[in-house]
Length: 234
Image (cartoon, rainbow, N blue to C red; front, side, top):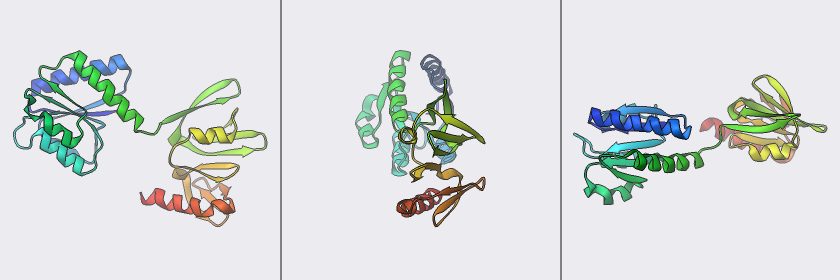
């Protein structure tokens, strides 16, 4: 979870950052907090480190927090924006940028924690999962989705290949499919592949980066080809 804190007052930045770290420790959230002394400094860092949550002061020299938020929203930025200010006069303008909340200085930990809980929930609900859990024999294993290359239904077994290792899962391939996110495609009744590891699609098969050939059902050829092209163009 990337959190950006923008305030021209170094003391305020330090205070808010410490509160954010306290909230992360209590909630169990893994966060990275970046500090910026001005709106211009934050904009300069884009698009290398887009934040999930923005804690913005409003009254700053140069570009103020409202103007910064409008610029980000114009770029279709979907970060959860929380304004932190000593002045309530700008609250109505927050509606123009879909701000999550306003906090008036001095900020209390209770108020900030409550808002961060809401922002964290909103961000997580808008993100695909990073890991998935499946039963494998007597074990329950957690897999990183980006490491899963493909899943195959072989006879009465469901085999998952991840990180160069194969795992025999205790669930049908249909159940595996419902747990996966965008980037995976069912290319055959017996195969689901992660497009990240597909190097070529040709006729009735596709080729994985490892050189493995995976069959593509006739009815799925068009969808698989279009998904492959879209994935890499994006």
